[in-house]
Length: 316
Image 1 (cartoon, rainbow, N blue to C red):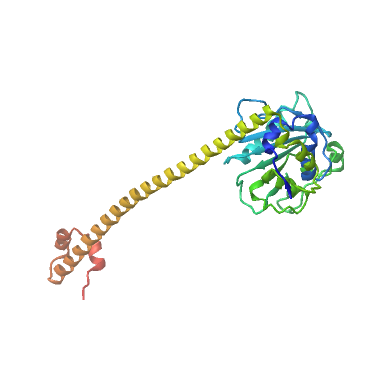
Image 2 (image 1 turned 180 degrees about the horizontal axis):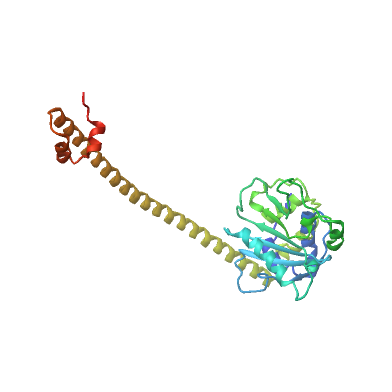
């Protein structure tokens, strides 16, 4: 049995999850994903989580600072974006620069975790959750570069990859909807907006209670329905543009193929015409030679060079 009538998670991120009273929902998702108890200290402004008139919901993000001072950027990308992997890199790089004060030592750079929830086919792979870190591998010995004891004290970690940004990608559409663990239950919710009855996943019970569509105020519900309509219109436009572009590409390819085919046909025809003329010239040259004509006269008559004539004329 599932509990229905829950609002979309990306809309909740824009409207409900910034409220401190609802931090437990995001804390639950992050705790299940990262495998540790995450406590959110505050939600900061990021590039696209500001309140604006753009409610098409193709992309939304939240910038979270946890109790350890680490920054976690949570991004939901609904529509296809061909350069999204570089968009992820830009997001973490920009945060590093934005939180770097003049004269601040590099050891004070904040740790950044980038959680990307995508609803399109990003990359190629059979899994629905991917984790990316930075490792340094020896070119000769193939060993992993580790921190020295002194560096471990400076960075307060034993692993180099823990000081660099980490990336998580949840490819929601690749989830098979069979939840094997509590993290899967979260992904199932992200895909269906439903919460399995009896769930033990952190934050999901709270999500079921606070993201209930029926519990929205009249104004919130109107806003949600308006945003949902805008989102559907946006997806329709994107889909229509993609289909139109695909058809145009096929037509253009067909035109190019026909043009190239004609050009190739002309080239083949010209080549065959030349070869046919050469073959007739060779036949004439052989007949002339058989009648005892001088080879220089045969060359003048057929247009073939002395070298060409000596190559194929049979003297037997």
